[in-house]
Picture: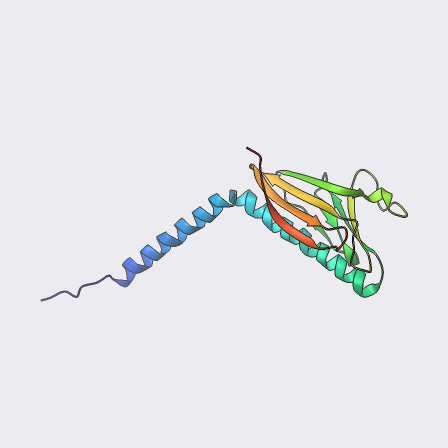
Length: 155
């Protein structure tokens, strides 16, 4: 009796599963592992909240602030939104201090980005670093544009 040539369904599924596992491991290695993925997700979250605050400022005609507290690893945004920054690694805010704004929003070295009704902002940067790399969330002061970019550690 002649046996048909080719691969069985079980063999094909096993090869596909091995390729999937190898791909996941390669992506994790290139992005700094789990910590790198958490930092990237955190940077995208902060950027989204800053874009939301800018949109609220434009639509409402009222300035909106996004407060960043690197020590407590928290942010607070427009319309009462708030959240956590990723655990692990280093978080650095560069920009205006919240106490510089009218009424002194908060104390203690926390930073803020204020978005104005014309779309402009005070500008700033939230840098999230771990394992020799990380992500920047940059806010342009003139346009209020929010960008996320990868940071490579100096060699």
